[in-house]
Image (cartoon, rainbow, N blue to C red; front, side, top):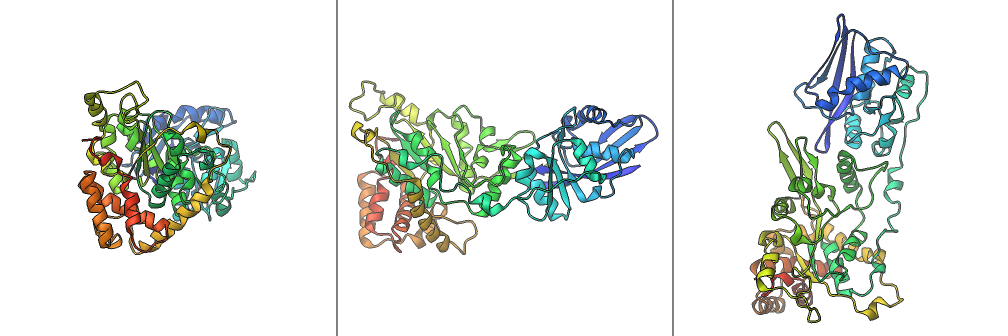
Length: 511
């Protein structure tokens, strides 16, 4: 008897429906075709044990299973449940007339229990698009798949529950999630809040500007000055994600298997990889390309602590994704594109000892050591960082103050107001949503300067020996400062503040 059951394969952040054809005939043998990987080939042992432990048997006949389309590589253990149900129906051990109306996915334990799978959200979206009635999957993944309205999503704990439902012996309630309620939950109670930070008012102002314009930022200062503490609080002042951004972000985390019984992600991601990370782990890849840290930080923040400690080739592979806001991984037979629109926040010590420019420090570094340390960061990478700010240690008087600082929620209101001005400005442009994404043409149009501002910028560039790359960055940041003031044009005070945020372009740093 021939039976067709439906599963799904995930490539990048999109799913493709897989038809699993199970044919049982005279003879002996188990033949699995259609480019399965080793995890799928091993499934016969898991399926046989799970069927036996639930009172069913593996037919002692010739079983041929084809996974179509046959030229598409299938990977992972998530097809166990699909194959098991197909074998039971094809061998007439169970009767399931409506089996073709459901997508069935799940990894089987030997006792018939189900283990979580990856990519449940993209699979549910594809199932809805193709008109399937429902989707069976492990209970641990049910929240992420239930985001999709108009599809019956059944979270099941074991093989027997699926069999009983298909035979009409038992009932399962589809899981439903109020997406909007999930989306707005806990938005005003960030885990890390700027009200915990004592002093550092100039750095907080800098963070506010970076968040308002989506600018990449680098913090330079000695150990213990609070660079990491400030960076961790940046997501709390970024504008809340839109529903579209939340869905995109949840999709990527679903594919990577990082959701852990969470529905829709409503907090912007904050990723902080260790400096020993490889370039494949950072940008994504592998024989079956998986998203890397830069894609996991999509619509959020990627924090690189101690930037010069990262391997130079790892930092260089970030240059193209920083510019294009997506990363394309090519293999011989297919190409996968993952989105990677993130804010880069980096921190570094100013020298190997960490105390360069500190008159009270006994530790000093020679000019040669300094040059070797700083040369690990290439000019083209720094070119993509709009704001450089020096972080100084907080004096004792500030640390011992009892007074609470301004909260993240209050700062976020100003940031969101500035972002709304930018959204309106770029409403006609498809790939530009905030100031950091402007190209030269937009800078000329939206950052026009009066004579006083031009003269100020000219004087600053000559006196501070600022490079040509600093010119456009200063104008972009000045435009964001003007948006925070709700000013229609950029004036000299905005330019003056933006000039302060180019520390590394000055002589004596990377010269």
